[in-house]
Image (tube, rainbow, N blue to C red; front, side, top):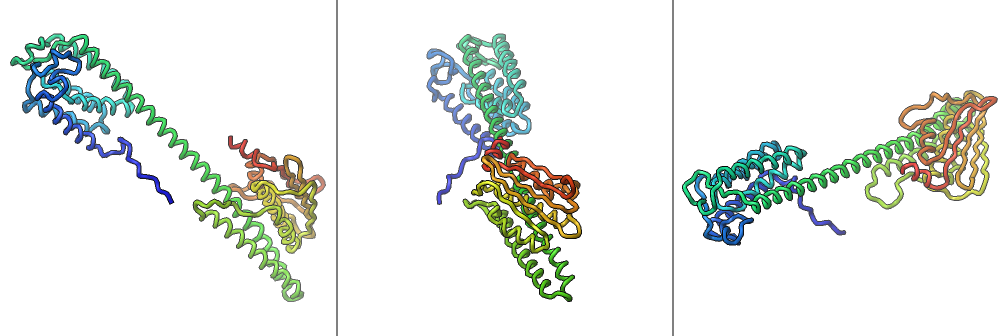
Length: 422
């Protein structure tokens, strides 16, 4: 038995403090390393050339405010899920202040990257794009006004920020676009994943609903037929118990057989409900191969039954076989219930065609009311649902000259049902 390896949760499923804690450590260590010339270009910005970005480039060493700004960005990210726009704006302000103060270049902008991505992924796309554009324009405009040449960055100015250059503006703008576009791709993928999960959940609910309806029909047909037979035979036994004990004994034997059949079929239905992960068919095994037993039980209840089989009798698809059997069973149950007093004859005709099978049950009794069409898959409605679910047709109504007729035409394969599902 193979078991799949446990999968790591998505970043959205991580505790909210994981990313800020990592960034706090990484920004602290990276900024100290850059301050002491640990980067590939010393303390210079990543877009500067080798001369300006070398270890001798002037910069302001990290002081108390500098360390506070290094940790402020990760701390603000703790709010990114509840208030993504506030986090984005505040992190942008912290990053801009760090740059304006002329501190050593390092990984401090990573907090702003995470805040930008959080804003886009949570659906604040317009605000993230517009905020990024306005923020960059304001920053470059301000540095153009107060910026100093790079040789003067080490002076005692409050904001010894370097004057913007074409290469610097191009690099930062491209960096921001890459972050925003990547965030959009992540957002679209998350939306597709959520939509797929929603569709899958809807399909599972639909299948569960259809399965419940199918089981309800099965239970109705099993119980209605056999209990109707038991009711009729019990009435006969009570009526003849004193005057004709032998015939009463026959009625009691019929009750025993009917109750046994009901219990057997109920165990099959309940077993299908309880079964988990089995490869064997879950549907009850009733079919036209049990037609003779069904007709015998109806005759034992006092109903005169005639049966005609037309065409070449052959195995059917499981769904068609079960539906045909249940339609005959329910029709005979209705005859027993509603045909009225006196001798009643039911005529069952099964006709095998090339592409379908026709089932017809006629009786010469009073007939069942078409209003006997209860919700939940019982009676006439249940028979109609069985036929239409397979892509077949169904009709029920009074016969000319009296009596009642039930007729159905069912496909011999499951192609009709498959086409209907598509």
